[in-house]
Length: 188
Image (cartoon, rainbow, N blue to C red):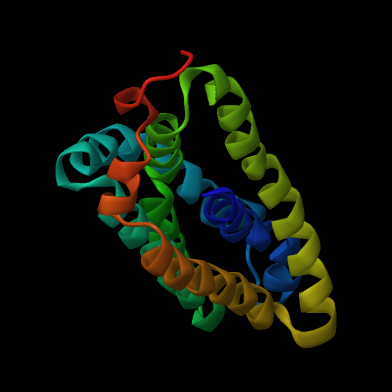
C-alpha cells in the first residue's frame, strides 16, 4: 500500500521536472504548463468523495487495483503524448486514477491493523505522498537528462504496473477478512 501511494505521487509529480524540456519542445506557456500539472489535483479533489463512496460499495481491493492500473496507463499516455492536448487528457486520467486511492487505501489499512497502531500506520502510509513527490521529481529529472523525458514518464508507468501486478496477487478480500483485528480479541 505504501509503494502504491509512492507510485501515485511519483506519477503525479514527475511531470514538474520536465517543464523546461516541454516548454521548449512544445513551445508551451507557463499557463499551459501549470494546467497540465494542476489538472491532476483538481481531478483528485473533485472525484475523491464520489469514488470513495463507490469503492465502499464495490470493494476496496478491486477499486485500488483499478485506480492504480488507470493512473499507470494514463502515465504511459503522458509518455507517448505528442502534443499539449494529448498530455492534458492523459493528465486528467492520472487524476481520475489517483482520485480515491489515498482515502480507500487508508481505510483499508485502518481495517486490518489494531486501533493502537492506527496512528503509526496512517503516518507511515501518508508519508509515502511526500517521499513520492520528491522521488517523482528527482528521478524524472535524472532519467530525462540521460534518456529523454518520455522515458521519465514511462518509468513511472512501469513502476505502477509492476505494483498493480504484485498487489493483484497479494491482496484479496479473503485475506483482508482474515486479518480484521476488530474481529479478534486483543488490546484496543
